[in-house]
Image 1 (cartoon, rainbow over the protein chains, first blue to last red):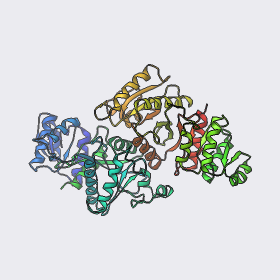
Image 2: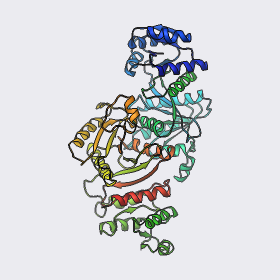
Image 3: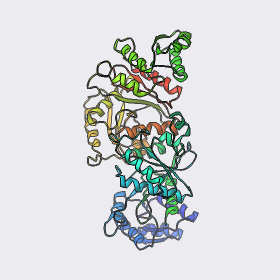
Length: 275
Length: 275
């Protein structure tokens, strides 16, 4: 727990510890050590400030003293700098860093996983392949045996001229079919409605093995992913959890506006996929 | 009404006529003329098929015999071809064709207008300027005296390297401030939450004259616009109306999956902004 100096983070951490799925290690101020760690009997490492906390926490992962990193009361930039440091960081060379969200929507019949709402502006084909791989691994970790992954576009047509990535969608679909990602069904380009509504799929007379029953969505770029994340949390009462993938340990990186619930769920998500 | 051979279109048209805000002219088959136009006392022009209907309807607008075009039971492509025909169409040279949606969301306190969910893949600066102009005109037609227009991005920072359009957002903001679009407030880049939630704006410690109270949203590209449209209709119980702007008359271009309500609202929207 990197610099957990705010009440929101502390409450999420206490709940997760109480539920028994994490054992917190606080990298915190002397004051937090005394008042919070002490009161709960949590392990702690005292540091002088946020930057030192970030470096220290990253070090704990490298030394296999910690399995998950969670951001507390500091700027995302500061933590990311420590994580991405070429010598002392925890992103292996040539590994794709991306952001995975799990959402529970009152209007959808199951969890919906998606990427990328926060990290990669416009994924290359290679980055998108890794995004698919992470998503499928995520779903497997959630006991979804053969997850349905929809590659999202505004229509169902490949249009290489205006949307070059729709051509790479076809490649990913074929790779999925040949078992490159383990058991899963990949299809696209598909729009959101066709992906998540069997009725919409029928009306549009489209036939997809996703069958309007997607487990996971891959968005074309960060604008689409971020907008989806914000639309469902703002207008659809969605509950979300999110982590960074690609790093040596999952990283929970809450936004300033996230609820305590969302932080708690994100910790749960991180522990589920932590190896 | 271009080839209104389906019950959905007919019902929307009948309701709009009954409410008294349109006077339908059906460009239809002999059968529809007899069974539907006759029964309601609607004017009609008989044609042999969808293509002829599209050309005929566009001709009626050119001859000032019609003020709105609505698509019935035909492919969008067929109608668009007639509309965009260089000699016989109704898109004036050098005019930007774009798509405007008005949405009522249970979780938002007023109508929300946005562009572009359907036409321009990646707007140029000039196209985006026209999108803003249309949106502001729309809001004025809805008696919103000083509409608040948010230029949407995944963050609040101008990032010319990864997102070149965020630089043009700054230009549009200045142009708005100098009165180029009439009375309005334009700000951006802003994310969806900051645009539509005063609380989120506060949490993020951002200060914008939009104040979390946007009337209208300009999306960076069609992927974002289309996704927003589909997310709110699929997951948020949004009611929507939409028209094409730029043509000599507003064009109502419903999707196959749209409800009768949505078609009816779109006709209402078109009549409100028809000159």
